[in-house]
Length: 81
Image (cartoon, rainbow, N blue to C red; front, side, top):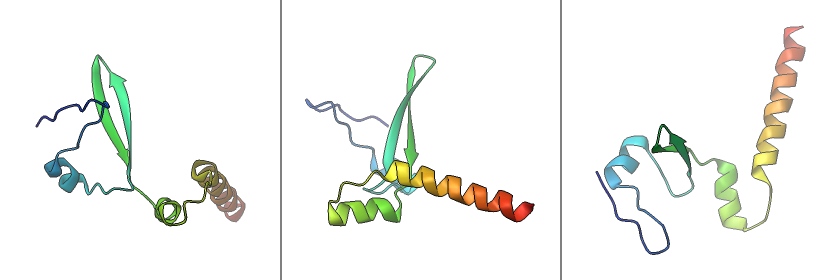
């Protein structure tokens, strides 16, 4: 499958690919360079991403996610002792 780059450098992910991987508008994509090729990776949107779209409040969700991951890991370690 192929697509065209717009004058602003944007591309549309073909519908077949969006459907196959269940990609939605709140999902994030990452471009990686691997052996002279560009690889598109994606991260599914979360309820926090949807909330950000609705409220338009500037919140560092990445930082919040990391804090949550750390808190969960600490709780698991504590429970294992």
